[in-house]
Amino acid sequence: MLEAGEYPKIHSLWKREGWYFDQDKKNSPDYQNGRQSFIIGDYAQPEFGNIKKWHVEEKVDGTNIRILYISGKVFIGGRTKNAQIPAHLLKYLQETFTEDILNKTFPAEEDKSYPNVMLYGEGYGPKIQACGGNYRKDPGFILFDVKCGPRWLQRVDVRTIAMKLNVKSCPDIGIMEERDIVEYVKSKPKSLCSETPQIMEGVICRSEPLMLFRNKLPIMWKLKCKEFN
Image (cartoon, rainbow, N blue to C red):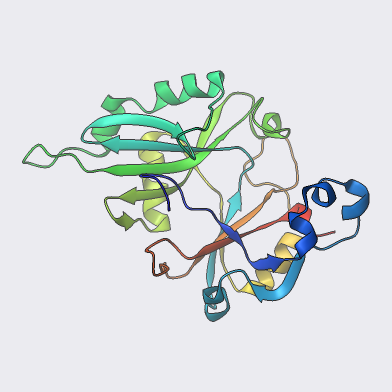
């Protein structure tokens, strides 16, 4: 059960072999060398196998951030209520997502009621993950999802909101079929948003058009480049 405003966990495309959940084996380079943890073809969620087209975006390696705009007030947090945000990143977020900026982006209705909005993104940059300094030289935020009330916004709307807030949105790779996505990730493409060239962390794939699970969460999955030798 997600706490209010918490972003859902994103499953990998396929289920994993049992050894992957053994921390000693998972963390052992000797044991992992040449191994594939996935059970290829055995979908992590049965819905994945019924969808032909996926909207693909780059997965950025950072720390999960949520910006809650509720009743005209701004709340900044990590993926969960206990998550710690690095001080230099928190300062940037507080300066970027002010009440004034969000009031202008999501103005009150005529009855003076404000929409309840949840902005989900990745805090990234120096001292945020080992590769953070390659993306950019100062802390930043890259938007990957927006929820207005009960409604998840379409990708084009997410990008429009990012522009209004003067932040980046995750690079759009395009609409692809599963087999082409897998081959793309296997090719270890370069990141589309990194100032210093580096291999992309991976991809996030959402159903095209957008569809939801029965629990009203978006149907989506991820694949990481490092999981393919």
